[in-house]
Length: 67
Image (cartoon, rainbow, N blue to C red; front, side, top):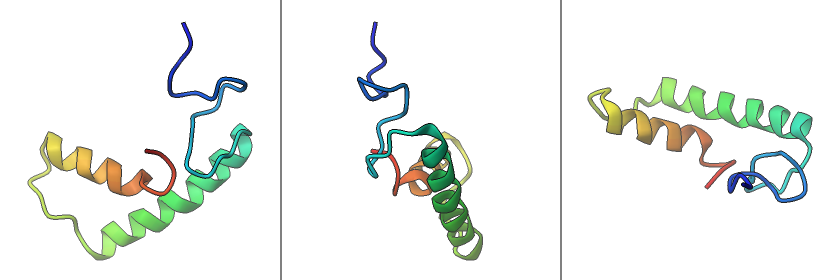
């Protein structure tokens, strides 16, 4: 069974940047995640740190890379 989160031709997560090389995706992910984590550190996301809040944090952190 094919993983629906991976590109059909390479085992790399489908991403908004269209990157199909894992090492390049890892590098881009590191850059974008550090940027978003800095934003969270400077401007806290409102919430009570329960499940829904962590889902929103995850979405915020990875919004530039993945749907």
